[in-house]
Image (cartoon, rainbow, N blue to C red; front, side, top):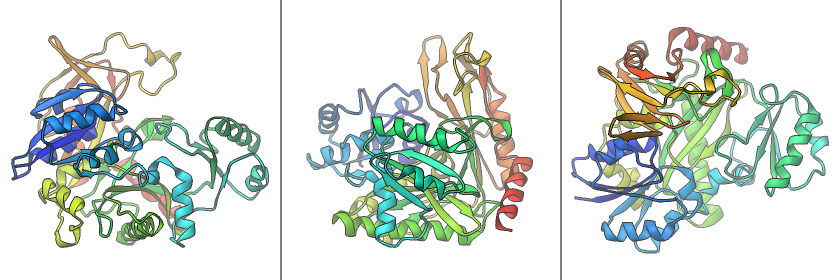
Length: 441
């Protein structure tokens, strides 16, 4: 029996908690959360609410609970060095040290790593510490993407055509970034379809889970502002309709080479999740960015499909024995649709932004799985915050059935809520296929 510490309080962590508790080892779950997640709390032996920068409190809680190993959900604790801190008191983690978490926390680190070790996948890019040379580089690009170096909560990346139109606007944003960050990264804008590949890594071996496509846009047909993610889907053949297995293999190959390069660069093995955001283009698969943890919502697509005991997987990541494991996922499709407040992701003056009530009621959701995100369970019911509330997941033998399960469940959740009904549907999938056919031509 293992005592497992879970750090995090979102829907991703709820999916992690469920995967842990399905283990045949009958583990005991202890959870350190920034806010109380009722789904995680209901299956935890003990919960502590605190901040992710309070490493002393996390260490004390881990000692008190006699923790065998920890699983780190979000990026903030990784950036704060929680893995290093727990390692200092003899507790290993599924998650990289602060230095190796630069894979996510420093976009310049990752771009330069691929460049130094000749790893394919980089777009045309440059890193700048001042405005010198930026205008000249912008003139060389057909489309521009501007990224601050560091964590920005998913809101720092600006793309020409989406967030700005002209080179002058790009220069103004670069100036703003350099006032707040040590450097700015400028990428060429790529045309294609994006996919997420979440990989398990013990430092030497990298194992891919099924690819997922996330939907960032707030409204149907990919309209409106970008969000943390309105939902996602995966397919029963462990590919996606607009790509083939070669595209999956290319993303995995890049990740394997990055894991090797990290060890060569730092002398330290990366133990945790390497989640690559890739884009399939006419010239092959390109890397958009890496995250040093599972995705949210993508974790809700893949973790429920895992047939291999998740505690055994975690131990193999920590012990460096992934090469001796046969990690299997069910050949099923999954569709995740996020229930959000109507005002989620919208400017304050938008008519939806004024929510009359944050209370929601959950009826009969049938065969769907619910993963709580930013909700508060009170005596008189369940309340939302201003963020994403519940991840609703349908799992079935094919995408059409999985989408129907998720959509039926969504209709059973009442309140001042919204979601994207088009995620996982045939018309949107066919739109992605046509787009990719045009790109490849």
